[in-house]
Image 1: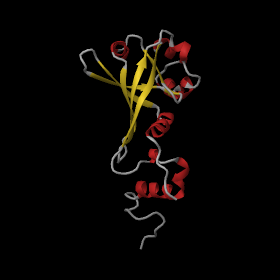
Image 2: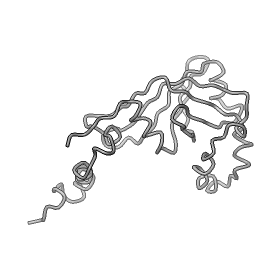
Image 3: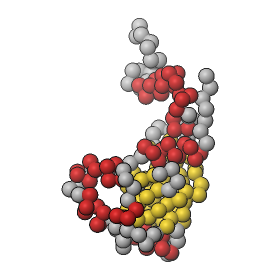
Image 4: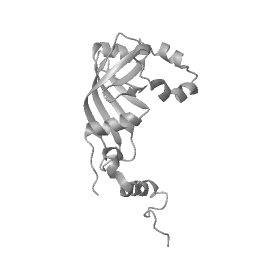
Amino acid sequence: MSATILAPAARIDGLLRTEVTVWLSTATPDATPHVVPIWFSWDGERLFVASKPHARKVRDLRDNPRVMVALGEPDEDFDVGLVEAVAEIPSATTADLLPANHLAKYAQRMRAVGLTPEEYVATYSQPILIRPTRFLPWHGRSVPASAVEPASRGGAGLRRLLERLLGPVRGGGALGASAA
């Protein structure tokens, strides 16, 4: 069975549905890049981000709404995604636009830093809506797991992944092979 390779948008959609943090890059008025890690929600069409109203990224976006979002874990062959996008700074508040599952997604992390949902919504009161314009999956030489249709990964794909991950631990031998 041959693997079905996902289109760039589908591959990055999968990453956006599983990642907890993405990196948002804006440009300052003098074109200096500004990159920050952010919490987000993805609804399949846009990212929702809650920000402090006077944050550098908000000021940058008022001058230039074009952004780049980077996501994924740079494993041994760099299975990551890049998203070119346009951001909007709505006049509504975070409380008005907060996606239903956003606070649940970050509940454990907020508790870890002593932040209540009410404090989060009050502190990060400026929503940012980010609409992708181009999806750029990026990887090294191999076909990364995020590029393969889940249904076509099957047992053989899982076996290859486990061999790749466990090979160094097991001395590089094939999974299931017995030692002599």
